[in-house]
Image (cartoon, rainbow, N blue to C red; front, side):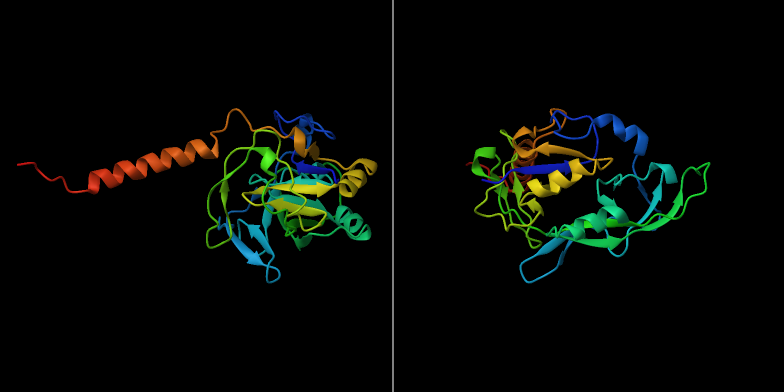
Length: 243
């Protein structure tokens, strides 16, 4: 039996991390998109059956808080995961699978550093590893889909967001159907991150993941939309007067 972890940006969360803490978000901040970037959520095929899900086309162009605010991981305001060139080298050296790395354009820094520093190289972590559907014991069930991009919508998870090893493709980096915004990793990725004391990230056991209480659940949104569709259909149906 394998152990799996979710890697995420430091933030206040109801999920207790195994590694990292939320306070580091104040040190590193978030990268911002430049003005020319346009939101365009889509999927790009890597192989016949593999896809990368992205919210922009072309190279990602960003504005960073400052040169001193670059950790081993960098996160954008849209929660995209970026990695430092040294982090990428370690991932490649260890033969980790399930991801591609796309060079990021650093347009400028919001604040200049007092020290002269060379331009850093960052890469966007494009995850194509596939974990399939969440394990049924997570309590997350399919509400609708898949659509033309292969995306399904699932209800909130009740008992962590567990991985079904029968549908997992064996990649070290992967996502789950219905939860493409979460990046999952294997034990050996976790071990390297802990060993190297990598900065600006948290690792959460999948069984410890909790649905944020401040967020509306997908099932609530789904039922509300279904109710609105029924009401709209009823209003558009001609009324027949009784004799």
